[in-house]
Picture: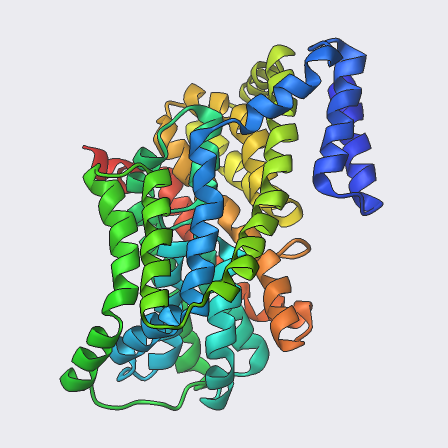
Length: 422
């Protein structure tokens, strides 16, 4: 009862537009006072312990790498290479836009950064080629969902911290599911083009043009190669790869004179702002999750669900529904920190591997970036283009459907997450 009342209190504060970390923090204090799960004298220590992690240093570094790539123009080179690769198809620029989102996801680890960067570069051209602006916004927003699905991902760093799993292990497991989501967006766009005839561009593939684009993008392509290659080969930890990527991107930008010393404060400010949003949420949410564990709430939750059914299929669908609905109303970070400790015991009860559960959870939560009312990517694209959010959300429905299909596939086919570990 105390937990339920505290959650109602948190929801009331959110309804009153109180920032999430403040709402959850006050709710956590109320929970500690009403239950005595932890003495309030340990509050400050517990908050700092929640964010005292070497792995979390990677978050601002990946965000900073993405900002450097945009400011130095390297992100444009990635998109030019993607267009040279797929531009000869009937839906060539739409496909290259989604591939550009995938490339950028390998650098920034953030959906919102992905949507903002690729949206600024591609929106004008997409509309010029025949895409309605709301649909073009939905395409970029959906492609940018890969920011938390394709490694390196901030979401996998956080869930690894919460459940005690190496983020490098999760990056390997997430590779195939992340690419599946990327391809689902590409295929959906191709089908929508066939039905509505949006994009009218088509041409012949030019090997010379492709080689020229590859040569111009070689420095830009070296960044995701350093990040992923270093992690998958075991040379770097994710945090170390993020630090190396920042250093290399800055050196390339300064060598090419596209990054100047006067640009540093603005880039560091951007990274600090993102980190300033994420870390307070992690701190209070970890404390809240710790209190729930002490009160045996996860175990009670498992007993409540299994008293209704022991069917693994039904329980997997229940978890999927919880992830989708939670993603519609809360950001990924608090969802991970609160729901992962709560639902992992359910997954364990039905025999789901811990790594498989993490990938299933993040893939399902990724839908929240294009589903209102939260829909962070929808807000980013609306802010960039002035298009009404609900107009973008309606055009995103086909992408939501296919991404739900991929989430179901990931949930019921463990090999998609575990094959590279075998």
